[in-house]
Length: 350
Image 1 (cartoon, rainbow, N blue to C red):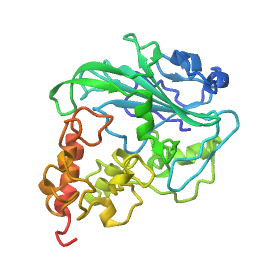
Image 2: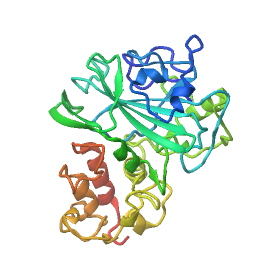
Image 3: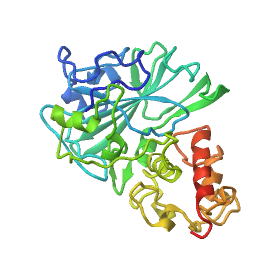
Image 4: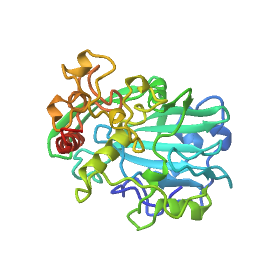
């Protein structure tokens, strides 16, 4: 997929992102094996694993809006085997051929205001398209950052850092177990990718290269239209707050809150393309009361963020109340402020 640097990761992504002609390609035999490899290096996804230099055919990419995961810095790569191509979709994740691997490494730094300094890897998640469907595999890195081992049960990792706002932060970071990976990637009875959708990839990288155009040029995808869909950059304050809030909910919440997701029974569907105000939460009563409602009666009460269940749950870090319920242990204060601003802007008559 794309040949571009992941933002501010000079320690982890070398000056030659993209398909590396000098290196050997990943091992398709290992990728398609019925048994997950014990070590990340067994897949051959990196020519230099410690420096995250991709192997031949492995390409770095990013999303216009990444999911919040305890301030983690994420490094994404994709491998599409041989001369095969992904099938373009205007709404959902692309249809990747069997043998495709999506790679996402989660990294941190002692001071997250300077993420390129002292950055270290904690986990890498692989999503592999096997012959019978997609499968997720978590890997945990050693302290030296040279190898990651398969961790089907997940792991708890204690981390100390200065957060992006300059506040000392100690967290117990959770590497998800294999079944938790499936929860977020659920689409009906299947497991599917979340991030690689046209609207998330349709933006220019630091080198000024549009990722969708670059993927098509590389022969990794077919059928990209002249004007593919795009979502706004969430933190571009020159854009309308409503569209930025919807884009935030799309990447952080909609993988569960959709018709065929794990939270479908809530009736709250938060995808970018959803147009029904009630399904987005406006004036919507919860399907079930309890601790998760915080005594509030509307998911989104226009003009009243403090009376909105959505804000109550985003503002909590308590198990059973906090939303998203997986993937974070701390509150995304910036995201919470954005959603509050959006709700405050809504006409109370809506």
